[in-house]
Length: 453
Ligand code: PA5
Image (cartoon, rainbow, N blue to C red; front, side, top):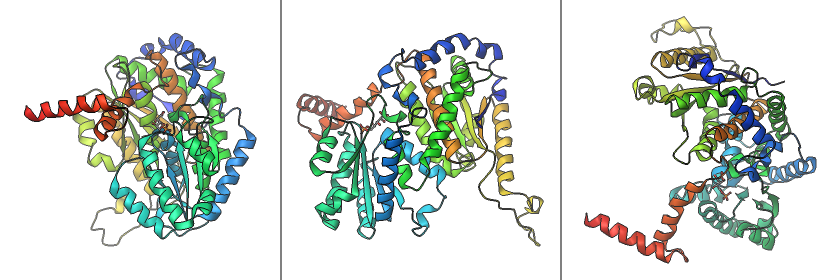
C-alpha cells in the first residue's frame, strides 16, 4: 500500500474535472505503451522493471562494496554529472541529517561531489580538503566520455595516486559505466578497478535505482533495500489501474498536461524542507531533459520555502500568469522542537509558544498555497507522511512514471536528449578538440564578426 497522496483540488479553479478526465483515454494508451515497451524510446524503459525485479546478488555486491568504502574513508567522493549524479545526491541529502557535513565521523563517510562543474576553485578546494582526509572515490559515467567528470577524475586520480600510491588507489576507486564500451570502461579494466554496470536500457536521469544511485546511497549509510521497496510499492500500485481517480501517477500526469494545454507552461516544484533541495534538482533534470523538446514541454523550476518566499515569492504571487506549483509536502518531521516562551516577548512571538516549529512551517505552506491560488497560480500537492527511504522510493517511481507517460502525452520521446549536444560542440570547437577543426574555424569567424558589430 502506498502512503503518497496527490491532491489537485486547488487546480480546479483553473481547469475543470472534465478537462482532466477527457485525457483518460490517451493516458490509458500511454501507460500501456510504457508497460508494453512499445512507445518512442522504448529501448530505454529498463527502469520500469528495476524495483519489481530486484537483482539480489547485485544488491549484495553493492552493499559489500559500500561497506568496504565506509570502512576505508572519512570522505567518499562521487564523480559524475546530470543523471550520473543527481539521483544519488537527491536521496543522500533527503535522508541524511542537515548538518551531516559538520559532524564527526560516525561510521558514515561524508559524501561529496565532483565532476558536476568545471570550476577550478571548486576542484582546487576539494583537493585541499582531501589532502587531510582519508578518502575513496566512485566515478560514474555511462558514456565514459563526458568532459566534466572525466576532467575531475583525471585530477582526483592523480591526487589519490600521489597520496596512497597506485596499488592502494585501485582499492579506493570504483567505476560505474557501460558494460562494454567507453573510455572509463577501458581504463577500469586496465587498472583493475572494481566496476558496476549502468544497464544499456536505462538512461542517466532514470538511473537512480541502478548502481549509479544505489552505490553512493549505500556508501552514505542508507538502506537501499527500503528505498527499492518503496519504489516497488509505487510500481505495483500504479500498475493496478490507470484511472485518474485512483492512480496518483495518472492524476499528476493528466492534471499537469491539462494545465499545459491551458497555457500554464512553467511548473514550480515547491518544498518546505531544506533536505529536499536536491530532490527538486533531480526532478528538474528528469522533467527538463525528458520533456523539453520539439518546442514543447513545461519548464520545470524549483523553490525552497520559506527561504524563497523572500526572493521568488513576489514573482509567483504577481508575475506572469503562466505558472503552476506542485508542493512536495511532508506531514511529520523526524524531530520535535517547540517554540519557547519568553518573559519579555520583545519579538512578539509568545503567541506561538508551545507550538511545534513544524506547525508554523505547515501554516506558512497552507497560507502560501491559498495566497498563490488567489493570485492565479494553480496548486498541486504531493504529500508523504515523512521523509524516509520508503517514501523517497515511492516518490522516485511516481515522478519517473508520470514523466514517461506525460512525455508520451506530449508526443515526444522522453528518453533522449539531443539538445544537450549543442553546447558541447561549441565548447569542443573553442577548446580546439581534435576532430572539430571545421567547427573551430566557423566559431572563430562568428566571434570575430560579433566583435566587429
Ligand atoms: O540523463 C542523462 O542521460 C544525462 O543527464 C547524463 O546522465 C549526463 O549527461 C551524464 O552522462 P554520462 O553518464 O554519460 O557521463
